[in-house]
Image (cartoon, rainbow, N blue to C red):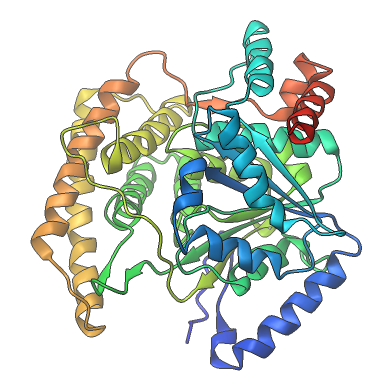
Length: 422
């Protein structure tokens, strides 16, 4: 059973329902959401690669579960990795089975000529649009939702969740959709345990982000950088900051800059920090375990795997520090990476105790080796972020609409034309 622990920064919503009848709980929860949906347009945004449609048993299960709910007014798919029209048509047919008389479905063909032409027009106006990937796909799809001007609540989750169920989706949405709450942003969290290996996963969160942010908070306290300490304490309050599941109001989403690299999740938390009060932010326990695809360490290739992920996340934090008055140089970062590593070793010891009491397999050498690699990746991030670098953020749609006043009309026209074509 979950605990009751709360932090000063944000509200944590625990999975206390697990002590009772889960089937009855889900029925009551979905009934509440159906009542909320009478007054709020709730949309689900699914970033999906074309290749995920062939992931037998995973995406099919997700689509089957979504098709069973009655509170979603629309589902919008941000389709990436589909340069061929035949792939787009296949995706339209695949996701089209979600459509009902009460639920609208749209597939946003990110690689299609109409969307690519619009991105080119924005580039001509010196509006950064990022690079191909999840961040850009999510950003374009949010633009379409804003162009429709219907969605009040937008939920987002990945399409590779092996353990997906309706309770997960409903719990992600309810805190924001509930009119009795103040929440405008809700982040999901969960345990990451491999049922086949009986071992802890989530290495970047456990071995890098958690000890790294903890280290930064302590250093900012020592330097009396109060605002930055509060910023890092806020990030440290999230139990799984790299979770790809969150829900927010459209009013908030319109003003968010979106990162287009692996820093998407931490950058989103930072944007929320800047725009909301802490009482408007929550995190919720979505599942007793969460399983999806795992990335390779990729120690020798900075362009992929956990290597790229750690570098992108570290670059975001280092750039944020510099942009908020902390002068970084080689000596400071050298101190930082060694301090981080010692802190990571302390966390690894705690993880080993946790694994032992729960009868999990735990390879102390592999854990320490990964942290050692992450220490080196941190230096790679510093080498890349030197000089007049900025965080890899795409401007908010509020800013884009100001610079490109008819962008919503053009985006709406492009998406509708794609979805109407056979």
